[in-house]
Image (cartoon, rainbow, N blue to C red):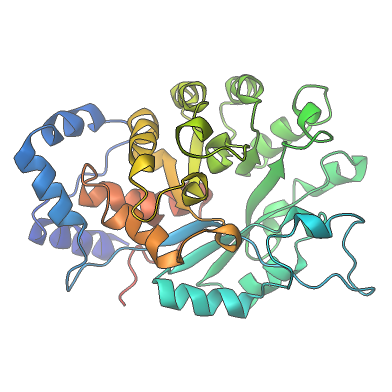
Length: 339
């Protein structure tokens, strides 16, 4: 580990960033913003984001679904088929091939809601390809028998945490009617990171984060739960960004091209990404795609961060594009992957 850190520092010095300084989230953030306000700083940061021989950055997608067919042997819950992103199964092998083409090193697998509360395919993928896949698993939060599963949740090989959605007419009240109240202290005691999708429920999330400071929460898709596009889709960002004062809250900047009517590089998105970055800092913003509903090639979603945001430093990109999600979820392994 120490040797890997020394190599990373040498690389950063060669790329013109000076000594690598691993500061806590938020520290040095305002200082870097002031430095980037100068034209020379912007040009230097843009050059740092370009791919060059010898650049080594771990690229980790914070959300991808895989699923199997709806069959009598493995049935989906009734009525869920219309929710699927695609009409046919998406397998681990399809994802592995697409990862190779896009230059993505790792993927956090999130079992999709249309299959019900099951994690079998994702865990099997992580078992077979532990260097590529880990899982944020589903659990039936409304069922009493689920409570006994939390303490040993992370003993499942490949499992990193829990993921819940609170965006449907059925699920949204669970954040405030007591249904989910048992989960937060249980996950906090077991040191289990939790991803949630809570559009329209940020005040409830704020209360949860305040009451359980040891609970790591990740807000999926910037809590955007709308079919609107462009600026209208991001109207809730000021409320979301107020959560940045809770150090146990991070955000997943995922599926963002889906909320743009522009072609790549989706310039209308850049100011919204900057707003989130300014609030949370690079160590609490996690890049992701929700690949099966992505409206652009996976590679373009990568280069949106690595090449098209000139105000990011090379070190910031390294955190946002992969290092931050791995450290937050506790996914160990090499920081760097040589392609």
